[in-house]
Amino acid sequence: MKKFTVVPLVLLLGGCYGVGSQRLDRDQLDYSQALIGSSKQQTLLNVVRLRYADTPGFLDTTQLISGYQLQRNISIGVGSDSNPVRPAGAIGAQIQESPTFTFQPVTGDAYAQSFLRPLPPGSLLPLAMGGLPIDILFRLSVQSVNLINNVGAIGGDVGRGSPEFFELIYDLRRLQIAGLLGIQLEHSEEIPGKTPAFDRVFLTVSSTTDPILSDVVKATRRFFEMGPNDERVEVIYGAGRPQRGQVRLLTRTMLGVLGQIAYQIDVPQEDIDSGRTLPKVILIGRNTKPTVFVHVSNERPRLSFVTIKYNNKFYYISDTDFPSKLGFTMLQILMELSKTTKNPGAVLTIPVNG
Image (cartoon, rainbow, N blue to C red; front, side, top):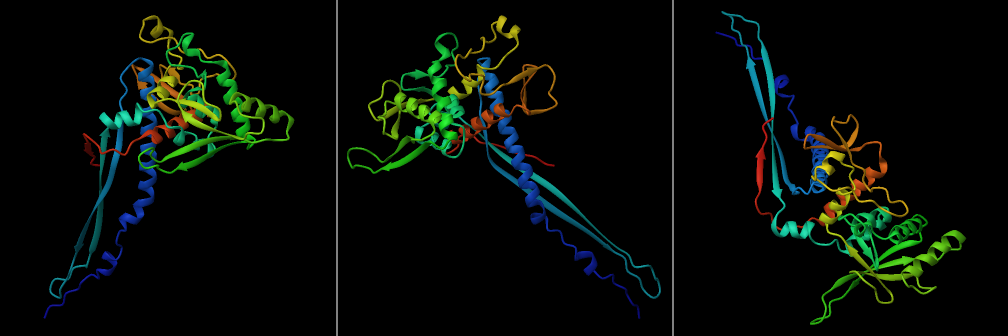
């Protein structure tokens, strides 16, 4: 009678692999960083394209699937009384990753809604409530306040804007830091047959006993044509002279925001002399340096916040330039704010086998 020796499989099969739970935290962080990095590069590339009157293009990542396949291999050696062999066993495993990315070109109605529609004040101003600097927010996204203009992208004397605009946003930032500036939202109910429901936006300027800030409060209220004891004014979309108790805010489209940053880039003089692009916009007034300072180099920078290559040159934002990084991050926030939820048109799906 033959006796067989079986290697216990408990030791070989007991070490099961929890692929999903072990990979979740790593994949979530890795893909999140990759998506943010590619979004930053796409935004900067479109800014540089607009600087050279090149066509911008936008591609959104709409779906990301990361799948794993686990393969196990087990071999077992057995023996008998007549032919004894040393029992042996081996186990092996292989993990194969198969990520799939789905991209959606932004075209048609989605393009118009996201990049050609002015940013609504009711969505824009609450960003200041979350702590974003209101002066940078206005420089990026507001073309005019009442009768004073922000700098324009066309350059020249017409595009330089009003020095009073920069004085106003400087004072608004001081009031914001002091906690004297606020944003209020009120929901207006629908009147059947007359007006649909909408959100009303109010800008509040509180009083203070501080003598220096008190002068700033008075100047700001005077600009908004508020009474000495008035503490809020309604913000409405549009340009021109407002009615009493209102301030007109003409906001930009996202293409306008991108174009404004584009024409502040210092490009090589040879590109201007050859006619490939125009000289950058020269700003006049207080604190009028570029919102986002974009460098250009023939060599790839060693330390950068974001870098892209265009026409054999590298354009980048320095990682040590905090104001430019803040301005670019706010630009990214505005980009997300402007996106629409319309159904996608053409969809490009790329499987990637690792």
